[in-house]
Image (cartoon, rainbow over all chains, first blue to last red; front, side, top):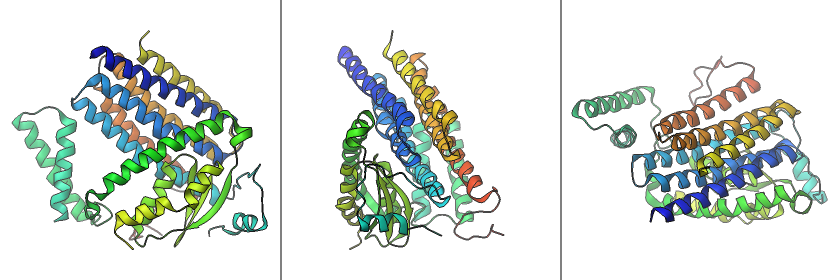
Amino acid sequence: MDLLLDIGTWILLLAACIFLLITGLGMLRLPDLYTRIHAGGMADTLATFLVCLGLALQSGLTLTTIKLLFIVAFVFFTSPTSTYALAQASFVAGLKPKLDGFNKTAQNKEEDDGKVPD
Amino acid sequence: MRIVGLILVLLAVWLLLSGIYTPLIIGFGIASCILVALIVRRMDVLDHEGLPIQLGLGIIPYWGWLFIEIFKANIDVAKCILFPKKYLQPSLFSCKITQKSDLGKVIYANSITLTPGTVTVDLHEDTVLVHALTKLAADGVKSGDMDQRVTDVMGEA
Amino acid sequence: MSIFAVTAIAILVSVAMALGRAILGPTSYDRILAVNAIGTKTVLLIAVLGFMNGRPDFLDLALVYSLMNFIGTLAVLKYFKFGTLRGGLSRSRRGEN
């Protein structure tokens, strides 16, 4: 039983490692701010969940598991708010997203250029 | 009514985080929970947005569904980062939303942002401006599935 | 080598990549994004290190750090947007002047 839990922890934490490394890679190689935000969001969601689940398998049903659950809940509630604040602030500041590789029809272009908030 | 709920929630969080159960410490915990509740009442921040107990348990299946969406979106974004030439197709578009209350709008906008691959850039009266990383993520928001589910959870037609 | 050490190293490499973005970042917002990402990874690092040393009490620090990271990002963004930390954004708008 212990061995099974250890194997589960290995698998979950290794998956989290892979996602974290992909996140770091995305931070470096994606072209502009808005695309990098997506890469950061990956570490905030699935990587956090996988790490906490992997650690929870080690601690069993104790108060430690509850604390891990609280960490996941806090990160899941706060991270979209700060991401939204960041994206909105940079959009209001006039930073235009690069839309490379996106086939701009006339209608899409209108949508992209039109909505500048006050 | 809502203040009793707040005290119960605070007490539950306190008991779960403390881990030391002697009468003196628990007494301190109860006293601090009541003190916080009194301060909150004086600050007048306790309303249907501060402690949304009116949502009930209907939000839990939504969280489950949202988690599966997050899982799928993570795989999508990971593919996009590893092979940007093939999958990277950023787009910025605005979408109508059907929620009436501010709380519903915030839940929807935060759900969009929490799903990697889509980020809410701006939230106006009843339109939401979304930046999407891939075509798949953009189609997911445009289909309005999540919008419909949030509206159902909020109990607004 | 335990899995916790492997995870800690992976988190540190990821933090180094985010730090690279903070150094390279053409705009200030890139740097704020990098700082926010580093904060989230620090939460994970604290949790993993606590388990590695057999002291799960570290999780309390991780909890507090996750909340501080949120407040810190919002404070920096507010300072960037309004140029000051004075005045509230609360519903009543009493603090605005």
